[in-house]
Image (cartoon, rainbow over all chains, first blue to last red; front, side):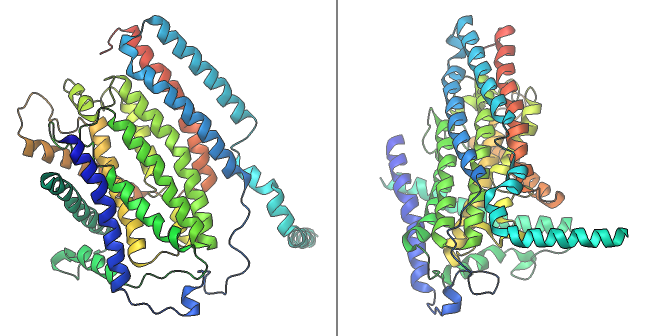
Length: 149
Length: 323
């Protein structure tokens, strides 16, 4: 009974969503013109490619997620069997947590998750905007100088 | 065979209805909090508004951007809504009445919520638009990061009953709801829930003022509606889950004998309170910046939760009150 419910639900839900999507495709009018189907960009014609580089911080977050999520999942069996374990099991868990904490402190210490400073010093933003930025800063500096004078 | 088909139908149809009326409730509540009326034109008090919205989205043209990757473009909303609906299998609405009583129900729910990232990633990538791309990057980083506190919080809760089955967890709360002994964890849980469901103030993926609509900028008509339904569906699911984990699920306080109808009503009332809380939070707080969001997760929530993961079993072992 339970198994047949499961299988039925697992078949029913994807079929249901797919059917609605097909209905929408049939019912909706299809009138595409070049402006409508071009990628949205605030009313402008799209500039450049949308497959852009992104900050390495996002990649770091993904890598750190993998390691830490794995470690958390290691603790789940411990949590389930805590009542069957002796005191030894508890201390093994404490040692495991300590090692985890050391790794976490190291990761925070090297600034792996420091988004704000990463963004300002990353080679991507500085190389793209450097000429304009340096001009702007010069102008601003001049302005400040003149206002001080 | 027919019976299990009806079971699925009985679960899915009211679920979609409640999602539709949750959107109306949100607009009405937000309207009252901002001293305006909210939708009130379609039907009396705007009660037919969700139906007209749904019908409109069903018959609108679904625009496929010229440079989009067609298969993935339509696959992404499909995956998102399907996963959001599949999460309802192990939820017990009353005593012994989930669709399928899983002994590892919580693990199943966590697996589904991790898979949800794929929908976001595919949507942003396949649309081939800058806004969608940046939105999906941010959203992925946010969902992936908040997966850790989410898993840690569930870990802390399940240490006490020593079971991953949702009905066991509810039965273990018969003496006292976990809200009482785990009050600090409940506060953290609400923060993580808001971030996991991409709600304001943590709705960075779809921060309208910066990214138009985030990862589903290019989706229109029903594919757009699927993301919308999935978001509100996961809101309801996670409210039900929090009332199961912390508020005793379908239990009334004290030893009151209940019928299945009353039990499911109790669960519904508790979940509605939590949904109202989510809307209330949205109306009250301004959006945070992205680096603040990530910093809160990695330097705020995760260290304190590591501490609590050690503290809670230590208390249980020290006072010898394991199940």
